[in-house]
Image: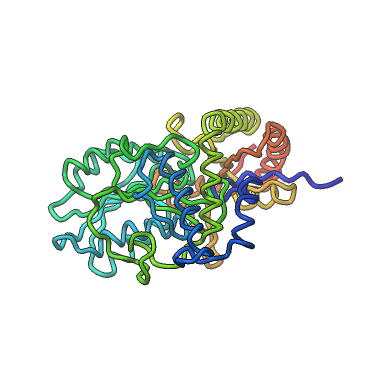
Length: 389
Ligand SMILES: *Cc1c(COP(=O)(O)O)cnc(C)c1O
């Protein structure tokens, strides 16, 4: 019998939707021109790119002229954060962000610290939530940018971005949000959120890898260009455009627009079903993340007295793909910075598992995991010196 394969790591990446693949193919083959070329091999591609731009803009309630394409979520975060910082607006050199940001934001801020910027990393509560009051208190005379994620990729907590946006607006400070995990799953309107910059990525919403976009509010002053070169993307990001990726991203947006509402409900149903089943069959589990203000895709649970890594490997052997609360870096297991910031004790961080759902998952997937996981946990606990039966 074939091994059942269950992919529950959709926050890491999503499979490309078959319609997205179909839409991209002609642009990897026949329509190979350079969109900057004035001849007939190039010209139509500008139109195709603008159609994709319109689809993204529509979902965000933005205008197409406010969307630029780049290589993904990481680059989008970099263009916004470094772009604002290095523009050296009136010599302002202070940035406010949070302790639970994605490495694309955190490490970008750390790089800026090395060249003379000061960064305040706001802490979060037990649910991974930022308190807007603390942002207010962290603001200084020379604060140039606030960057707070829309939702967290590890635990799914959704931040009070609109409130933070209002604070930033009142103080005339640029505001960026990394909305990579939220895009396509929950409604996002740049006007309601009061953001100047918003980052998204194709491969987290059934599009291809290597394509992302940045919303830049109309009227925003000139950004220092991180990638300099030709006049692409309104002089904001040089480089010949990834036309197949852009077309695929556009198609993914078309699907998102149609399916988001029903899709989110469906995903939340699977998420809650798995949570209920595991909480009922595995003693001493806790939910990591906000109980209600959370992405429909994300279930992160802490299981006491186990190593998440051993669970992950055991599940992998039985065809199930998930993530854990530890990241393997240089041969050692680093506890997740997100769970650590939430105050989860180290041993519990190492016993945390992230299940992230996508639209091809089914209730059968949930049942399969609910069936095979409890015996794995039991086996691992039996050999754990910490577990007293
Ligand atoms: C995946 C992810 C990114 C990075 O996006 P890439 O397209 O892989 O570079 C940034 N932020 C968050 C929250 C993510 O989940």
